[in-house]
Amino acid sequence: MARDQLIAFNIRCFCLILLLLSSLYYISFVFWSHCSRPCNSPNHIMLPKQSLPIHLFYFSSAWNHLSFSSKPPQKLLKIALFVKKWPHRNLAGGLERHALTLHLDLAKRGHELHIFTTNSANSSFPRYPHVNMNFHLSKPTAAGYLDQAVVWKQFQSQNSTGRPFDVVHTESVGLLHTRAQHLTNLAVSWHGIAYETIHSDIIQELVRSPEEPRAYALTERSIKVVEEVKFFPRYAHHVATSDHAGDILKRIYMIPDERVHIILNGVNEEIFKPDFGSGKEFRRKIGIPESGVLVLGMAGRLVKDKGHPIMFEALKQIFMEERTFQRRVFILVAGDGPWGSRYKDLWPNVLVLGPLEQAQLARFYNALDIFVNPTLRAQGLDHTLLEAMLSGKPVMATRFASITGSVIVGSEVGYTFSPTVVSLRNALYRVWGDRSGTLEKKGQVARERGLTLFTASKMAAAYERLFLCISSDREIGARREDYCRYPLPSD
Ligand SMILES: *[C@@H]1O[C@H](CO)[C@@H](O)[C@H](O)[C@H]1NC(C)=O
Ligand SMILES: *[C@@H]1O[C@H](CO)[C@@H](O)[C@H](O)[C@H]1NC(C)=O
Image (cartoon, rainbow, N blue to C red; front, side, top):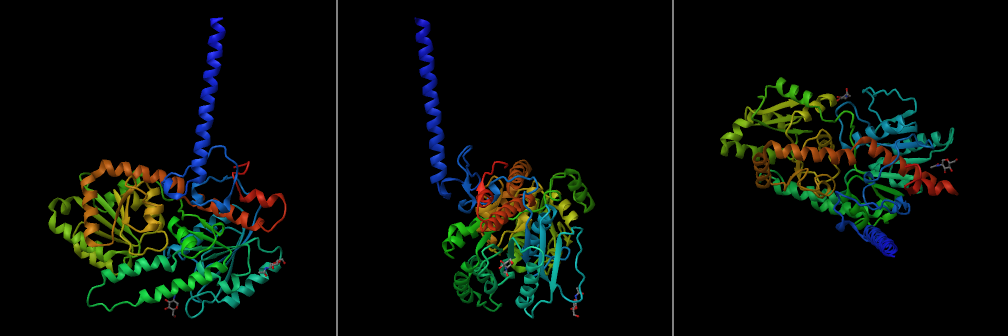
């Protein structure tokens, strides 16, 4: 009798626990599905473990948070890419580097690529071992753009030989809206839009010295925003490279949510990775003492709009104020530009290294304690921050919405500052005060975040799925649903 009661009690207990667990699951699901961005920190997007598949067009966070299969795709696509310029060695901006990293990866995965780009008459064009990467070159217009009539003819001739294109990708306005407006299987990736650039214009005006003429960019820029708001919707699908840009495209540019997709930039994780030995060797070669020092690094074009005037002034002030900083802090500057020679004369511990090839750049990151990017450009998403994070280094950068919303989302990965000398100086002092243990820990968190979000393979997998989804969106039947659904049974 007592035994039966005990069993009954146990069963009741068990049922109660089951009920509690299932209600918890329900609550978490409701939380996930009704929670807009402010509830989740962008650092941690909650996905239900066993919920129903979602339609990817309605996924409002960065696709990098999802995991797509690394297996070869079930369907190989014929892809057209329009890009104003193709990168030549290390002379490449963010847009060109994005084009190269992404499409090289897609070609490796077996897709057939047709790249419509410019080539100036006297320069040689880089060669790639992939037979499925086809270049269609043309002469740039006087302003350096793609000649729309010429590339359109090239495109149509490729579209009518063999099979038609499954999907069309344009890096920014490579293909103008006048040609793009009737293509439903098209995606455009934006690397800086006028609304973001207004923030840069405001800062440029603030840091302008009295003897420089006033730039009239601000009023012109507002008109540019209005123009963009008018023509952007003519492109079928939009890819934002930061969470912030995605928000602007939806809110300010009023493009319907299901046509705006956030895919953060990625960099080659095989090249940019922690390598203690090579970092140590790099330090030794350029004559940095083995211990007791703090090594800061900057990389990129050494020009005004990358923030070098304020960095220069902040360092100058600290060098004058702090004797230990003078002796113990080394600043490595990689890159080319007018500020290089000024840094050279600033202080002996500021080492100007000139432009570095990719493999050397990887060693450079490994030699640092922290990477600093004082950029004054609010538009786009800087690749150097991602490379430093994948190398396991904490990062320090300007407090732009694209950076704080997608990259340095909290103090656990690094430091942010306003684009003023005072704020940057304070941030440098904070780093100086934190020393190596704290920096190392932040570097580990940065590496983890980088591996989850900023690898080239993550970016390419997300684009591949987007392209599959867009191309099959026109097909009728089961296929159509498959590629747009997450998760797929095979994921
Ligand atoms: C191509 O020619 C122009 C003018 O002749 C010259 O200014 C430019 O540096 C050349 N470019 C290369 C890559 O040789
Ligand atoms: C490409 O070819 C397909 C099939 O012939 C055709 O339906 C499509 O309209 C073509 N696209 C363009 C932009 O001409």
